Image 1 (spheres, one colour):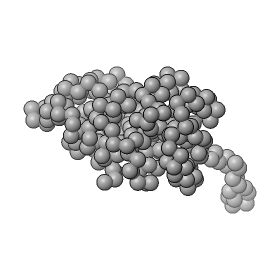
Image 2 (cartoon, rainbow, N blue to C red; image 1 turned 90 degrees about the horizontal axis):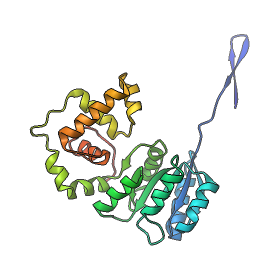
Image 3 (spheres, rainbow, N blue to C red; image 1 turned 90 degrees about the vertical axis):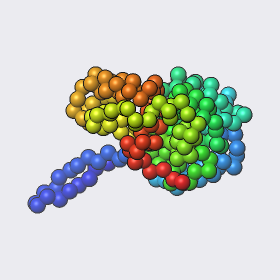
Image 4 (cartoon, rainbow, N blue to C red; image 1 turned 30 degrees about the vertical axis):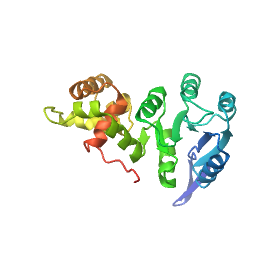
Length: 236
């Protein structure tokens, strides 16, 4: 795309590169839910509804055919499961995964995150939250609706007891890094943002997890939300 700008007595030419649209593929066995989701996606100019998949055996070929940026999947249905998420991450690591399910168990959410889900919503979530989740997932940013976060915090008694602020001192730099981790930034992105080395970020990250008795990123994000170390916008 070429843009002409008039500067005094002559034209100057600028090359404008349009923003790439986000291609979305949905894996869902319910016809009604698929069509409702497609309708939502088609309302947003930044999104393109690449295609639909009704069953697990068609997922891999559809990923090859449509090359989506974001895969929306219900891993809790009888037609899709955790093995599909693992297949996607193993064969299409560039594809980000947004899970949208009925209310799951904490174990299911934890497993989904471990398998490679980037964002997680419930089917009862509102349109604005779904749109935000697609944007976040496309950037590789972790995003969960408030009910999923509440589920993780409510049931994870062991993590809750270990992550009390009492007796744990977290430095201002560690809090800053914790906030950026919870915002979905990778170690290198945090390093670039704070003008420090990736090794320093990794060291801080290990120290934070050691202090809190936490051994995974999902629990670290849960702690950040529960202790108000960040202020994400979640719908009620």
